[in-house]
Image (cartoon, rainbow, N blue to C red; front, side, top):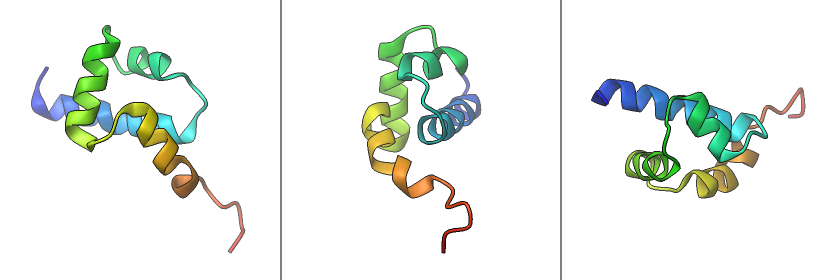
Length: 69
């Protein structure tokens, strides 16, 4: 996997993790990873967190407020 492609795919995974209720395995498959272990490794290498921990940490922060100030 090319370096730039890897970053683009993980960026999409980050968006899906905080913006959808898809399972981590569904997200991995959606962005082109056939192997969950490899996806987890690559994701953690880039973000410093596992996909699940990333979702738990950032989901409440990156959700739109829908007019609440």
